[in-house]
Amino acid sequence: MFDGVEWRGFGEPSRTIVIFSLSAGNDVRGFLVLGMNLRRPYDEGSQQFIQLLERQLSTAITSTVLIEQVKLSHARVTRQLAIRTREVAGSEARFKLLTELSPIGVVYLIPDGTVKYANDKCKPVSQSWPTDPTANRNKGTN
Image (tube, rainbow, N blue to C red; front, side, top):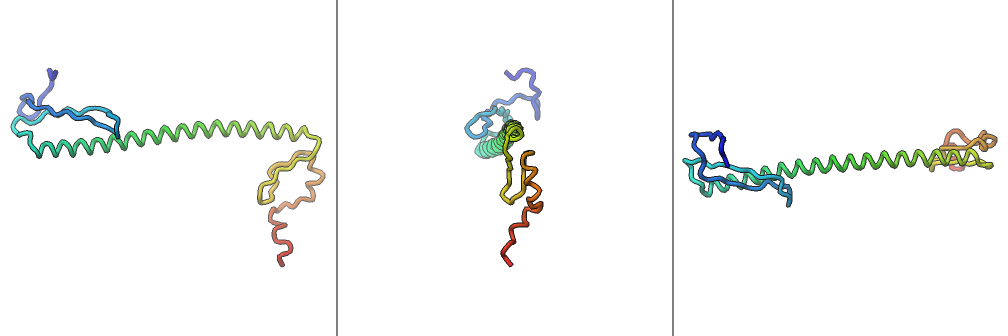
């Protein structure tokens, strides 16, 4: 199984191998295989070191997975926004076409009183509209 492995230290193969899973939450993302030092016993200190290493690697993997999920979510939202923007543009174009063909004047005002859109039928009366949307706000307050 470990043919061709260049063993570090004294060049002798390990007799004790520790394998643990690398996970992100409940999802196993891989495994780490450690060959233990022949001249050092596999004791409680070794176990604690391996548990600490496992926790730190799992934390790093979880962070990486979460960052990737956020990137994917952002890309999905960006695509959805582009689709909705095209839909709104198409809807506005249809609205404008319908109002241009309409025999009556159509005006679209935003809440501050600014004219957002008016078709050509409104031109005769639009001369009397205030150019400043705040012009009528202060009438009668003196």
